[in-house]
Length: 166
Ligand code: CTP
Ligand code: MG
Image 1 (cartoon, rainbow, N blue to C red):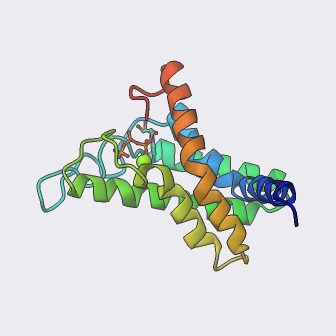
Image 2: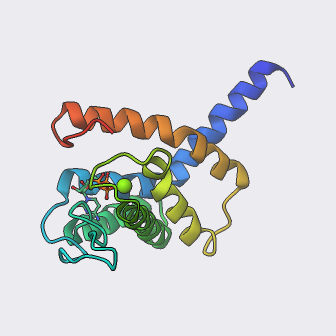
């Protein structure tokens, strides 16, 4: 196999992985545009006196993320996987927000790697028991997601959808 064959293989695998995880991508992006309102933690603090999750995790964002991911899954002929994957993405996102608050980080403060891969980790965790995911897809999505995430967040900042560029 030549170097160019290997490059083509990597690009094809990355493309298939993005297609596979598309419901998670849509689930993660939807709340940035359509989220807001009542926070899931209802404004309450944890035992350490800091917010449980913070104002960045809302009911509207959560449910619209599930709806968006399920819709994308339905368009891919697999609504159930879309639903489970989106649920995983949102739980992963919330788990990292919980961790960030415990570390004393305010809503929107950066946690490199965690911020970029929280939803992917959650999506893999909930989807893997339902459908077998090639290991190459998991590796590919972990590699391509951080640059895509940083790029789309910078774009969302320029479009004034986010008040920070990460
Ligand atoms: N969002 C939401 N509901 C959710 C998840 C996200 O409304 N369940 C919205 C919020 O407006 C949030 C934005 O999507 O600010 C981007 O999400 P994220 O980057 O994960 O939140 P942060 O504001 O960075 O907060 P945190 O520090 O908790 O990660
Ligand atoms: Mg987050």
